[in-house]
Image 1 (tube, rainbow, N blue to C red):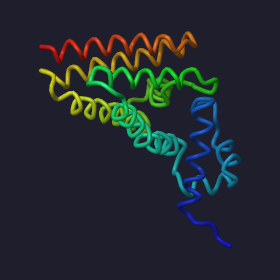
Image 2 (cartoon, rainbow, N blue to C red; image 1 turned 180 degrees about the vertical axis):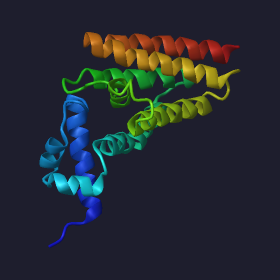
Image 3 (tube, rainbow, N blue to C red; image 1 turned 120 degrees about the vertical axis):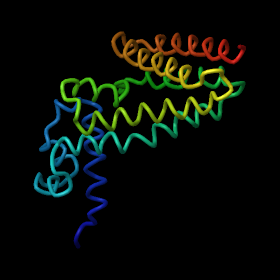
Length: 190
């Protein structure tokens, strides 16, 4: 029975996601992705013209689920916008405590590709970060400068990812969440 091309592509992206997140993109060969997906390397290249395209697809597949999860954490938190923003950080801190947590896949991939500004995965990562920032600015529309406030929170968030990964300590995410809560409360009080 022939396999469905879309399900094969999805299996490849899922295998790449698992391996790339765990080991980084430079540490994973296309052979390893093909083996994990249970296909040949030729099949992988039928679906993706290059490893670069596979890496971009890996990030694109994470984009909407990650944004939806952050929006869910915000929506389900009690209190006003300041408490809701802090809830995003609190939930991220809980994730950071898991032994398999490796930080932000978007930031890690962008860092690995720092010398390749035109790489499709860097573009996918930048789109994701801009989309989150735009969503957050819309949620904080009551602030006098919601775009600037959202950018400050994203800086805290990305810094929290880096510090918690460096020190393997989720307290950095919680501290950034407390700072974000104070920033939002101050901005909304004006």
